[in-house]
Image (cartoon, rainbow over all chains, first blue to last red; front, side):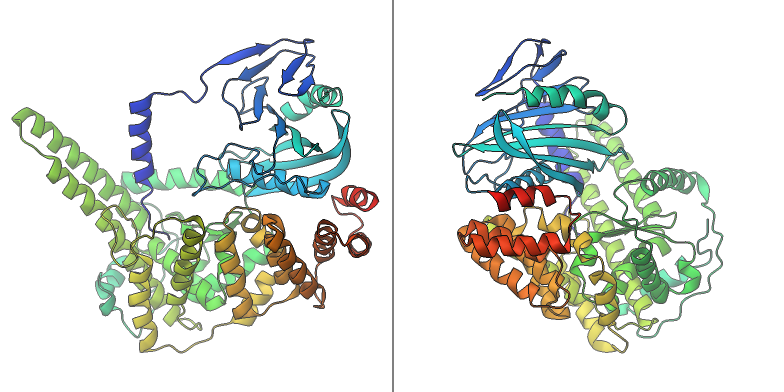
Length: 199
Length: 389
């Protein structure tokens, strides 16, 4: 019903890709099992090998995966100051991201994460299953259990996020994967990693 | 698969491509049903959209609410007639954008964002009539052939240009521009056929206001974000649709000619009010504050401010959470609570806002009331954590 051409962005996209030739992920680094991983102020220890992408989800975060981001992903954000978005803000004008505020209540953190995740991934099917108090890195915070789906494909996906504010800064971790196999397969290790995280 | 058999030629001939030629009286042509795609192009197109529909039917994006789907189907049937709508499959999908579409095989997709923005069955009839107009006149097939013809022509002309060392860019540009013009003409044709469907139904023609509000919503959003304005009167070469104000122009002229019928606002309010949270969820939790605020205000002004709508506007302000927003949100939650149909979440919003504004006793009291009304809410444990802190 709306009248902007759907071909114009595609044409511009092809021109940009052809002209710049910058891959989405410039590189990967192996994160070995049972060796401490430090992300800014957070230290956690995986019990299996993970792959760390050089492309960051946001200025204060890193992304890990076992099998590729289409199948599972673990994002860790450390020391996000007030006024900053959780995920990368690609266009402040056309797609502004929600900004963190240090005065947020624990329940506000769940809303902040949901809005950030929705906007970043352009998701309109997102359901919060449970929000509960939780420790993260030895600090009082919240845990969010959710499910969602992407516009392409019919897979139902699940996720679990933990968020805590320490000295006015946000520390967060988010694990997501399809409900079919990948989420239950990796969740115990992720939960153990997050339980043992310190910052 | 059912579809019209003997239809398009008569309608297209009587409508033409000019708005002024739209007839004031209209009788739906006979419906034969059981249409099967003809020729390799149409069979291929149907095969693709049949597969798309199989995927969509199982998608978590589809709103599984039979009552809502039946309501939309009911409006469609009253607009285009029971015979025509009998074979249409309606899917309401979770998409906050202002859109609907109809595939050539009879699959109709209606976005929750469309239902959130409309105010009456008559407005919905005008949109569904437009989409059905595309289906009735087989625009998908014509568009596919026009696209293929244009790309074939530009390929051959480019090749000839290389061989003969002749500049052909302007010729190719004219062909591409002609294709987009063809698209815009089809949109006008669908608008006009939709108008005829509405005029032959019990509904009043209410199409121009929908586009005026969409312009106002977009302007509000652009002003908030500091984006430049877009042309509203003249389409650009690559626009696939007429501009919103072009549509307002010819649709309002048609509305002024003869416009009997029912708006059916009460029915629309009841059918959409029941699922208001689902229709507005992704709008409220998105990032289009000014646009969504406009949508909420226009619905409230047209259909009345009830408890759920006041809650949604309060939630919009609470989510943005500037200091001034917190005060506005508290007022809106209080207004919502004063209504007999206030949702339990209004007490949640009021409680959380009050705590953030420093009024902890009032906040705790409101949160206690929320937990009393919604003890099994997914965030009950986190709310208790706020109350204890």
